[in-house]
Image 1: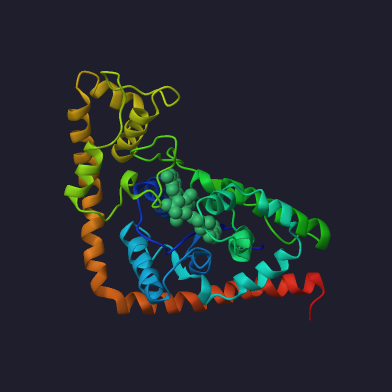
Image 2: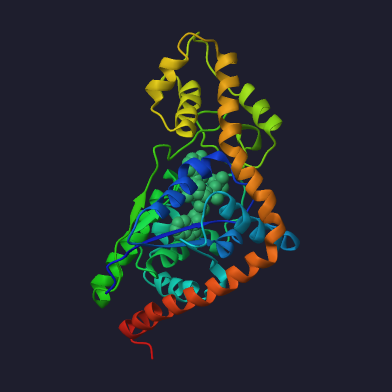
Length: 329
Ligand code: ADP
Ligand code: TRP
C-alpha cells in the first residue's frame, strides 16, 4: 500500500445485453472516473462470475468479446483504464479460496441477490452462493479504494469490507476497506413495473443500449405511467413517471426539477416522445462506436492479453503477501 494513487475497481458480467440501468448506474461513473487525476483504474469482465448462472458454453467466448467491445463503446478508454478478463488473472480465485475459509455460510445465505436468483428458479450451485467471496477477492486483491456499482451490489460490498476487516484482525493489516461509488441513478426501475429494478431478466421493461432507435422509441412509448395528467417527480407515490423523469434528467445531465418544469404543460405522449429522442441522441455515438469496434476484434484481443500480464504482476504481489500472512510457503 505504498502508492499514493487511489485505485478504482469494478467488474461486469458477460451475460447478455447491457441496458440503461447498467449505463446510468455504473458505466457512466466508471468512465467519468477517467477524468480524474491520481487514480489507477482496473475494469474487468467477470467471466468466472457469469458461470454461476445458466449459460451456453458455445456462446461464452463471443459474449466475453462482445462485453469488451461494449465496455469500450460505453467510454472505457484503454489509455486511461486497464480493461481485462477476470479468468486471465488466476490470483482472483486463489485469494477467493482463502476468503472462503473466513466466511460463514450463513452470511452468504443472507445475500438478497442470491435469494432472488434462487427464487427465480436458478440452481443454487455452490458458485452462486460463494459469488460475493470471489467479488471480494476481485476488489481486495488490488487494494481498491473505490468501486463504482449500482445499488444492488451494495450488500456484496459490505461483505467485502467485512472480509477485509476479519482478515486484518486475524492476520494483521493487509487489506483496505473499499468504498462503493453510486451515481444519482443507482437503481433504474423497470419500464413496465416500477417496483422492480430494470434488469435483462425482464426484457420487456428493459431498455437495451444497443437496441435500434425504433425499438427504443417503442419501449419508451409503451412505458407505464399513471392516472395523473401532468408530469411530476414523487418516487414514493408516482414511481413509474418519476422513473422516467429520473432517466430523462440523467441523460440530459440536469436535475429532475428542471425536467418537471420543462414538461409540466404537456401530456405523457409528448413527454415520452421527447424522452425517446433524448435517449436516442445520447446513445447514438455509443451505438456508432460499437459498430466500429466490432471490426477491431484482433486489436482488442491483443489489448486483453497484454492487460492480463500486467494485472497478473499486480495481483501476484498481493497474493504473495497474503500467503505469507496466513502461513503458506
Ligand atoms: P443485471 O442486473 O441486468 O443482470 P448486472 O448484474 O450485470 O446487470 O450489473 C452490472 C452493473 O450494473 C452492476 O454494477 C449493477 O449494480 C448495475 N446495475 C444493474 N442494474 C441496474 C439498474 N437497474 N440500475 C442501476 N444500476 C444497475
Ligand atoms: N457482482 C457484479 C454484478 O453482478 C459483478 C462483479 C464481479 C463486480 N466482481 C466485481 C463488481 C467486483 C464490482 C467489483 O454486476
